[in-house]
Length: 132
Image (cartoon, rainbow, N blue to C red; front, side, top):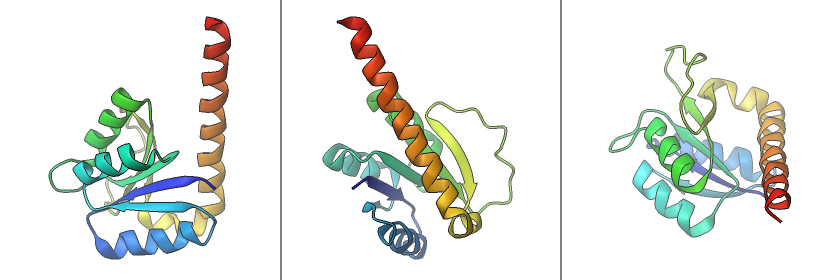
């Protein structure tokens, strides 16, 4: 079962996303801000991180940067803002999704998450094989 960390300062959003991903077989962990997310990540080592962009204390971009540089983990960022983030090329960010698009596109999102996980696993195995 794949583990997912959901990071959002809005309790209603966390609960909605929890129910959505839990019903699709994910083991879901929750955090209300970036600092708590780092603690949860260190404790549970999820394969996937889904984080809001705008949060107090640490933005989703800062969290993605931290997880990318410390743990080689990428993050899918979510937003309720109407600002266009499509052109963003930030360290540790796989993609940015508008919150209203998640439920309607969940199968595609899960497919992209699993594809990225497989690619990371294959790259890790290839890297290990090259060092042997």
